[in-house]
Amino acid sequence: MRGWVVVAGLGPGDDGMITSEVHDALEQATDIVGYIPYVRRINPREGLTLHETDNRVELERAAHALDMAAQGKRVVVVSSGDPGVFAMASALFEALEAGSPEWLALDIRILPGITAMLAAAARLGAPLGHDFCAINLSDNLKPWDLIETRLRLAGQAGFAMAFYNPRSKSRPHQFGRALEILREECGVDTLISFAKDVTKPGQTLTTVTLGNATADMADMRTVVIVGNKDTRKIGEFVYTPRRVE
Image (cartoon, one colour):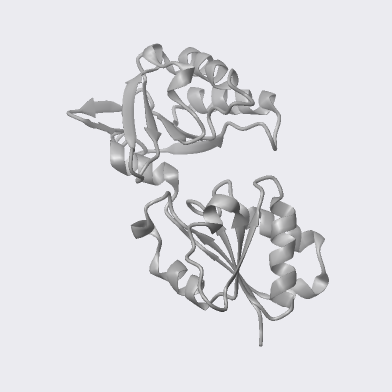
């Protein structure tokens, strides 16, 4: 049996947002690999082995998936959202580059998913309707100084911005610093939206100005979207016009 590896996005939380392509791969898989809460979204069945791992062992997880595929297994590495957005697709290729040369002959596919950023934007309206960027505010894999630089430059360039991993228990003060930088570069009247548990039961959406935003409005279950100078509210919706004067 020829093995393969699929890296699949499970979407932001609502199972209705998992693509049919991903469903097909999950049905064909012999092994599922991923971070504990993502693997637990997969229904057990006969002939399927579930491999749960901690969140900070991405390269080991990817190497394990590639090794099993080399043994003839059909492996799906699961990520939330889209696997190419701050997730497992990049880790898999990093492991591939450093690993066994025979892995290069494997059938490897990346199956896209709906990101939390895009799900949040859709719930809010269209805050990412023009040029935008996505920034991971965690400094686990890059220095905080670099994050500050990117925040400043994105604000100066007039991008709308989407932030992943804005505030955790281990780094509760950094998001407050991010808000200070955004006020300096974007102005206190710029709109900022907080989408918590997007597409899940208990979803909450809050939009305020940067001048009224506080660090405790975000946590690790929150996607934060900051508009640009043209972003506005109409009724309950937030949108950024497509035309720039």
